[in-house]
Length: 189
Image (cartoon, rainbow, N blue to C red):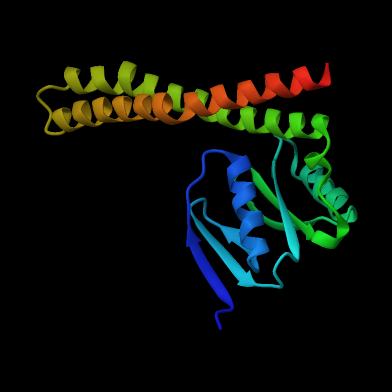
């Protein structure tokens, strides 16, 4: 019988990722690590754990450590931390996470996810602008240099690649999260 499992999956929606982790737990697989695409599980009792994905806010290491300590005191266990995502688990017998039935908690998590993706959008836009406004003209200016064509081609490809990622991935995510935020706000009021 297998005691470990590796699964490959890619998510742009943290709700779907969280649901998938919970479905894996129902099947008897305890999540313990990810690299963003590759997920690692170990065998557990089916339905033993439930999972929640949270997003780390830009705070000091001490504030993040305090937050983790606080959540740990609420019967939550830190399953894994990857980039800005914090994966929490708890014994299913302890009951659902607060956010499952609390609109304000769902709104907080969705706002954190929106901010995370908005920061990615801004960062990628700045990189594309640098490639388009600095690297591309530099490559054209150095036309006699041996790597001028490479620099021009590289900056063009980088700019178009980033713009495609922004249009095809980030903007739909931001739009979906914004709609979810508005829906949650309308439920509150």
